[in-house]
Length: 324
Ligand SMILES: Cc1cc2nc3c(=O)[nH]c(=O)nc-3n(C[C@H](O)[C@H](O)[C@H](O)COP(=O)(O)OP(=O)(O)OC[C@H]3O[C@@H](n4cnc5c(N)ncnc54)[C@H](O)[C@@H]3O)c2cc1C
Image (tube, rainbow, N blue to C red; front, side, top):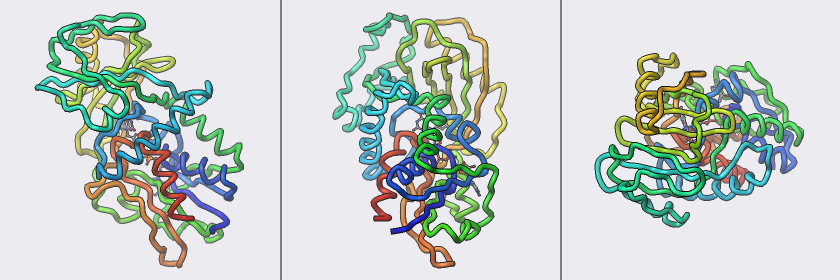
């Protein structure tokens, strides 16, 4: 068993692995160029939902394992995790309800009725949608959850070293006998992995929307989602292959217009725009052990695409199992 563990990356993957290893008694340090809110993870809507990641035969078990942990975390008021009703719509035909959603108690939504039942009722313009299903899923409010992970990690004795950029994996201090690579899209250069593809996502953060107490998502073009959080609401979104981290104002205008149209509200004020690069890996999430040139063990844990939060705990447990 290793004595000391170095984790590269302070997004959701690195922080979750950090919590798991530190709480299980390993001397654990995280090294990252950026941390928490500044990372791709800080730009995410952070809803539990398997999306834009593969292969399905691994992604779904990791996602279901994560679901269980997140449900437990809803009991901690400080975690920023809560259960919310997700309403997933389709504009083009009959929506396919995945098997895993059936196993979590999904139900078909009638698009004939423009009213969301339960809680405070809100009218939606569902005339654009042909079909949909709903289910209850965990939502991680990134403005709270990432800090919660940092706090848990540090309370377990872990340390975070920000503003550290590694040129190569062997640059990690040799005093650490295990390295875990959670560099997200950064693994393209760091691990020379040309399979990684930046799936750029842009969102607009707007003030809380009155009476919106569920998540609305439509996956087919234009991708549209509205995610109510504790203090604001995330309007999305985009998914295109691009490295451009600058927010495009015209894209924001389009996102806000489409979300407002569906929610039947006037365009809200824009508080912030965020852009992140989903670390999509064509050959699937990379979770495997390798040997560094200096003989140390490295475990790669990157390439989670649009599902980094959804897979976080399942993948961290898998990393731990590989070590053991
Ligand atoms: C708009 C948008 C919406 C999303 N919505 C969801 C959602 O609803 N649900 C969901 O599950 N997922 C969602 N995602 C996807 C999710 O955000 C990513 O899968 C997740 O953030 C990946 O986390 P990560 O920790 O692996 O990588 P990152 O968050 O990118 O973190 C990588 C870390 O590695 C560090 N690093 C990289 N290279 C180096 C280096 N050379 N040296 C040192 N440090 C380095 C970085 O500084 C950073 O700390 C969304 C993404 C976007 C963009």
